Image (cartoon, rainbow, N blue to C red; front, side):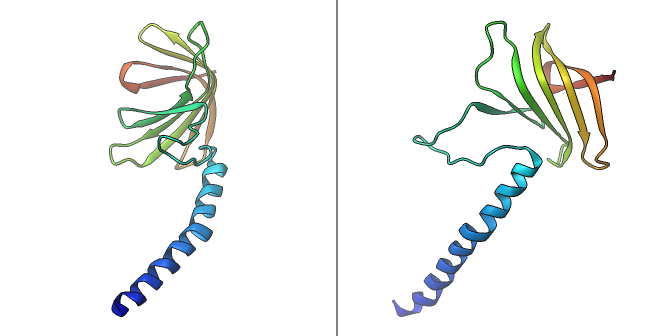
Length: 135
Protein backbone atom coordinates (compact mmCIF):
# COMPACT_ATOMS: atom_id res chain seq x y z
CA UNK A 1 0.00 0.00 0.00
CA UNK A 2 2.79 2.42 0.82
CA UNK A 3 4.22 1.78 -2.66
CA UNK A 4 1.16 3.47 -4.18
CA UNK A 5 1.58 6.64 -2.10
CA UNK A 6 4.14 8.33 -4.43
CA UNK A 7 1.99 7.52 -7.48
CA UNK A 8 -1.11 8.91 -5.75
CA UNK A 9 0.78 12.08 -4.78
CA UNK A 10 2.00 12.60 -8.37
CA UNK A 11 -1.50 12.03 -9.71
CA UNK A 12 -2.89 14.57 -7.23
CA UNK A 13 -0.27 17.16 -8.21
CA UNK A 14 -0.98 16.58 -11.91
CA UNK A 15 -4.73 16.94 -11.35
CA UNK A 16 -4.23 20.17 -9.40
CA UNK A 17 -1.93 21.67 -12.07
CA UNK A 18 -4.33 20.68 -14.84
CA UNK A 19 -7.36 22.21 -13.09
CA UNK A 20 -5.63 25.40 -11.95
CA UNK A 21 -3.29 26.13 -14.87
CA UNK A 22 -4.10 24.23 -18.08
CA UNK A 23 -7.90 24.56 -18.04
CA UNK A 24 -7.97 28.36 -17.49
CA UNK A 25 -5.35 28.90 -20.21
CA UNK A 26 -7.34 26.73 -22.64
CA UNK A 27 -10.60 28.50 -21.74
CA UNK A 28 -9.01 31.91 -22.41
CA UNK A 29 -7.67 30.69 -25.77
CA UNK A 30 -11.12 29.43 -26.78
CA UNK A 31 -12.68 32.79 -25.82
CA UNK A 32 -10.02 34.63 -27.86
CA UNK A 33 -10.83 32.49 -30.89
CA UNK A 34 -14.52 33.17 -30.37
CA UNK A 35 -15.28 29.47 -30.17
CA UNK A 36 -17.44 29.87 -27.09
CA UNK A 37 -17.61 28.92 -23.50
CA UNK A 38 -16.45 25.54 -22.34
CA UNK A 39 -19.26 23.82 -20.48
CA UNK A 40 -19.70 20.64 -18.54
CA UNK A 41 -21.26 17.78 -20.41
CA UNK A 42 -23.69 15.14 -19.28
CA UNK A 43 -27.29 14.79 -18.25
CA UNK A 44 -27.31 17.62 -15.70
CA UNK A 45 -25.12 20.07 -17.65
CA UNK A 46 -26.49 23.33 -19.04
CA UNK A 47 -25.82 22.98 -22.74
CA UNK A 48 -26.54 26.58 -23.69
CA UNK A 49 -28.31 27.84 -26.78
CA UNK A 50 -25.84 26.72 -29.45
CA UNK A 51 -25.53 23.35 -31.19
CA UNK A 52 -22.30 21.88 -32.56
CA UNK A 53 -22.46 19.60 -35.61
CA UNK A 54 -20.14 17.87 -38.05
CA UNK A 55 -20.67 18.36 -41.78
CA UNK A 56 -18.07 16.29 -43.61
CA UNK A 57 -14.78 17.46 -42.07
CA UNK A 58 -16.22 20.84 -41.07
CA UNK A 59 -17.51 21.77 -37.62
CA UNK A 60 -20.63 23.96 -37.60
CA UNK A 61 -21.99 25.96 -34.66
CA UNK A 62 -25.60 27.14 -34.94
CA UNK A 63 -28.38 28.20 -32.60
CA UNK A 64 -30.48 25.26 -31.43
CA UNK A 65 -33.69 27.06 -32.42
CA UNK A 66 -34.38 28.57 -35.83
CA UNK A 67 -36.96 31.29 -36.37
CA UNK A 68 -40.38 30.43 -37.79
CA UNK A 69 -39.02 31.09 -41.30
CA UNK A 70 -36.06 28.75 -40.71
CA UNK A 71 -33.54 31.58 -40.30
CA UNK A 72 -30.51 31.00 -38.09
CA UNK A 73 -28.43 33.79 -36.52
CA UNK A 74 -24.72 33.84 -35.60
CA UNK A 75 -23.68 30.73 -37.52
CA UNK A 76 -19.99 29.74 -37.49
CA UNK A 77 -18.34 27.18 -39.77
CA UNK A 78 -14.88 25.87 -38.95
CA UNK A 79 -13.47 24.49 -42.22
CA UNK A 80 -10.98 21.66 -41.74
CA UNK A 81 -8.87 19.53 -44.05
CA UNK A 82 -9.01 15.73 -44.13
CA UNK A 83 -6.49 15.52 -41.26
CA UNK A 84 -8.63 17.80 -39.09
CA UNK A 85 -6.41 20.91 -39.30
CA UNK A 86 -8.31 24.18 -39.21
CA UNK A 87 -8.24 25.96 -42.59
CA UNK A 88 -10.64 28.84 -42.13
CA UNK A 89 -13.39 30.23 -39.97
CA UNK A 90 -16.56 31.49 -41.60
CA UNK A 91 -18.94 33.53 -39.49
CA UNK A 92 -22.37 34.65 -40.70
CA UNK A 93 -24.82 36.97 -38.98
CA UNK A 94 -27.72 35.19 -40.74
CA UNK A 95 -28.28 31.90 -42.52
CA UNK A 96 -31.42 31.45 -44.62
CA UNK A 97 -32.55 28.12 -46.07
CA UNK A 98 -32.30 28.17 -49.85
CA UNK A 99 -32.91 25.11 -52.02
CA UNK A 100 -30.75 22.26 -50.74
CA UNK A 101 -28.38 24.61 -48.88
CA UNK A 102 -28.08 27.91 -47.05
CA UNK A 103 -27.65 31.52 -48.05
CA UNK A 104 -25.29 33.23 -45.63
CA UNK A 105 -25.47 36.98 -45.06
CA UNK A 106 -23.05 39.42 -43.41
CA UNK A 107 -20.27 36.86 -43.77
CA UNK A 108 -16.72 37.19 -42.56
CA UNK A 109 -14.19 34.59 -43.69
CA UNK A 110 -10.83 34.29 -41.90
CA UNK A 111 -8.04 32.26 -43.50
CA UNK A 112 -6.10 30.60 -40.68
CA UNK A 113 -2.72 30.40 -42.45
CA UNK A 114 -2.57 34.02 -43.61
CA UNK A 115 -5.00 35.63 -41.12
CA UNK A 116 -6.54 37.37 -44.15
CA UNK A 117 -10.18 38.34 -43.76
CA UNK A 118 -12.80 38.81 -46.42
CA UNK A 119 -16.41 39.91 -46.36
CA UNK A 120 -18.41 37.79 -48.78
CA UNK A 121 -21.67 36.17 -49.68
CA UNK A 122 -21.53 32.37 -49.62
CA UNK A 123 -23.93 29.52 -50.21
CA UNK A 124 -23.53 26.24 -48.37
CA UNK A 125 -24.66 23.27 -50.40
CA UNK A 126 -25.46 19.74 -49.40
CA UNK A 127 -22.63 17.96 -47.57
CA UNK A 128 -21.03 21.19 -46.35
CA UNK A 129 -19.46 22.30 -49.64
CA UNK A 130 -18.87 26.05 -49.63
CA UNK A 131 -18.63 28.44 -52.55
CA UNK A 132 -18.13 32.14 -51.99
CA UNK A 133 -18.38 35.37 -53.95
CA UNK A 134 -16.77 38.52 -52.60
CA UNK A 135 -18.97 41.55 -52.60
